[in-house]
Image (cartoon, rainbow, N blue to C red):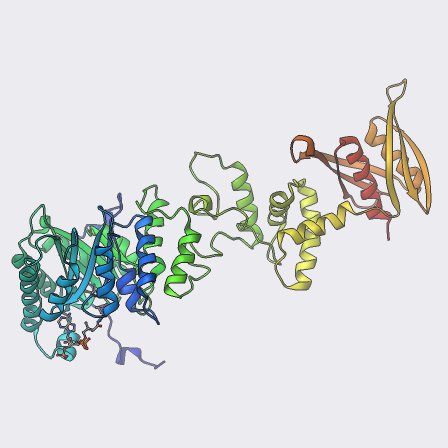
Length: 553
Ligand SMILES: CC(=O)SCCNC(=O)CCNC(=O)[C@H](O)C(C)(C)COP(=O)(O)OP(=O)(O)OC[C@H]1O[C@@H](n2cnc3c(N)ncnc32)[C@H](O)[C@@H]1OP(=O)(O)O
Ligand SMILES: CC(C)C(=O)C(=O)O
C-alpha cells in the first residue's frame, strides 16, 4: 500500500440531489426479481457451465419462483446458443417465466441473438454498451456522441431484427453499462434517446437497467443516482427501472435495498452473490431480508440447504459458512451468553406468534433448518448451551444448579482439548459423571413401607465392600428415609438439599429422571442423578449415586 493513496485514487463525487426522498421511504413489496446466474454468474466461473448443468440450474431457479431468468449470451458461445434453443424446442420454459439474453450493440451479434430466440413465446432481449468516461476514452476511443450512437443504432437494429420474429412477445432491456460511474445527465440523455426509439407503452414497457458494473461508492450515492434517474427519465411510466449492483465494496445488498427505496422496480443478481469479481448482489439475502420484515419475497427458500448445495455443485464454488441465512454456521451460537439467551428465547417462543428469539433474526425452521445446530459447545460456551444440548439430545432437563455444576465439567474437557464437544459426547460425559456412579455403594433394590406413626421405612439392598447387605432407614418421607439408611452405611451425615424430577420418553418407554442435590458430611452440595421406570427407585438410585460421587475414590 502507498503512503498517500489520494495520489492514486480519487474519491467519488457525491450527488447533489435536491429534495432527496429515498431516506424516508421503506420497502413494502418485493421487486421484480431477475436471476442472472446463468449469464453474469456463469461468465465469472472458472469453468462455465455445460448445457446439462445450465438446464438443472434453470429448473432450480424456476422452482424457487423466478419469473425472469437471464439464460446466457447466445451470440458469444455455441453452448449458450444451443442452450437457448434447447429451452425453447424442448419446451422447458413455463408459461409464466420469461427468459432473457444479453448482447452487445453489434448488428451481427444481435442478429444471432434474435435467431436463438425464434419460436419462444416471450423473451427479453437485453442490449448493453458502456457510457462511462474511462470506457469512452480507453476502450472506444470516442466521445459522448460516439457511445450514444452505439446505443441508439443498436436499439434501432434490435427493433428491426425483432420484427423478423413476430411470434415472440418481445421485451427490450437496455443497460447503460458502468452507469455507476457515468455522468448522470449523460446517462439520462442516452436512456431517453433509446426509449424514444423503442416507443414503449403501458402494455409493453421497456426495461432500463442501471448497473453498478463496478461498485464505486457508498450505497447512499447509488440510491441518489437511482432516485435522480427515477425522477428525471422521460416516459418513466412506461419504464421498468431495474438495478444491477455488483459487490466490489461489499455493499451490494445495501445498495440494492436503498435503490428500491429510491424508486427501482426490479433487481438483477445471483444466488449467494456469485458473479464477476466480488460478485453480483445476492438475491437470497435480499429476499430473506424482506421476509424478516414481514414481507414475503415471492421466492421460496424454505429448503435453503438444498438450494445452497445445488448452487455449490453447479457453480463449483463454496458458499461461505457465515453467508447470511444460508451459511452452515449462521444459526449456531458457541458463546455462553448467546446460548443462554437463545435457550430462554426458544423456551418461551410460541408457535404462530411474533418471532422474538434473541440473537436469531429469523426462525431457522422457516429455511428448513433444524434447531440442532443452533447451539454448539466449546470453551467459549456456558451452562445454557450445555443444558440445551442435553435436553435436545437426551431429554434431560437439568435444574439450574446442576447446569452450573455440570457445565464446569464440560468446560474442563473443552479447555483441555481446545475443541468443540459434540452433543453425544456431552451426553456420554453426563452419563459417566452421574449415571455410572456405582462404587463404593452399588444399589440392587429397595422396598418402602409406612409405619404406624406415618413415618416411612426403607430397606435398601446394596453391594458394599464386597458384601451384599440390606440397610434400613426411617424418615419423614421415602427420600429422607433413604438418606438416613445411607448415613448408616457411610458413617457420614447425608442431607438432602433439593429434589427435582421429570418424566422422559412416552408410552410404555416412559421413565423418570430424579436430580437430588445433597450434602455429605457437611461438605458443599452436589448432585446425584438417576433414571428408572419407577420414580421411587430413580430417587434412591440418585441418592446412592450422589453419595458415591462424594465418598467414592
Ligand atoms: C459487464 C458485463 O458483464 S458485460 C457482459 C460481458 N460478457 C461477455 O463478454 C461474455 C461473452 N462475450 C464474448 O464471448 C465476446 O466478448 C463476444 C463473442 C461477444 C465478442 O467477442 P469479440 O468479437 O472477440 O470482441 P471482444 O469481446 O473482444 O469485444 C471487444 C470489441 O467489442 C466492442 N464492444 C464491447 N462491448 C460492446 C458493446 N456492448 N456494444 C458494442 N460494441 C462493444 C469493443 O469496443 C471492441 O471493439 P474493437 O474490437 O473494435 O476494439
Ligand atoms: C450487462 C450489464 C448489465 C452488466 O452485467 C453489468 O454492467 O455488470
